[in-house]
Image: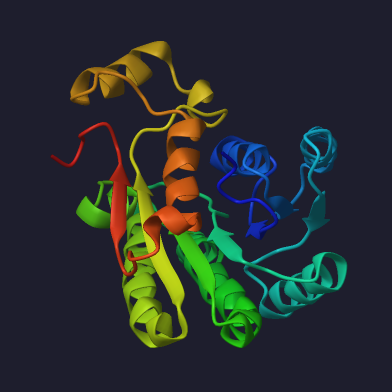
Length: 248
């Protein structure tokens, strides 16, 4: 059964990692996919082609969700191209880790802009069309770090905790119009980013997790699939921890 047949989904930051995993799972479930990427043009075009080969419509847009006007233009372009937007996944994110005493103002501001302000920009941009349709699902990518904090990640933790507060507020504001807003808090997910870490560090993470493994992009994508589909029709304002039991 295809859970998203005929729906149009927007995913920010989907040329690699978790975003790419979400795009692939959604396409297999019948969704048309519009996604943004920042600089990885080649990866984005490869993904666009692979998704279109699954028999749905997919298009990548080079756009910076952290810029208010670019987010608005992206949504306008998607509506012109696809005709509708049913699901928004705010996935774009960066890290600039450092101890607070060494963290520059620039590194703090950049992480807040990309990880948190982009969520405001994109949600604001899709709100109008979802209100008109009296339907929609917004899924915001937080992190276990946003729930419990982490030394050396004050900027990242603040941005991801902010995403949770924003999610709950939007759920309260838009619930009466049948627009749902939930957050996902991934734990240690093994992607191209974690592949740069030493094997010892990665194994240390795995050993500390009750399920004794890192998560995959598909693990996160399956949770997104649930929140995007009608299976979660009575869920809003929630945070799902996809972390192998890290926060247990």
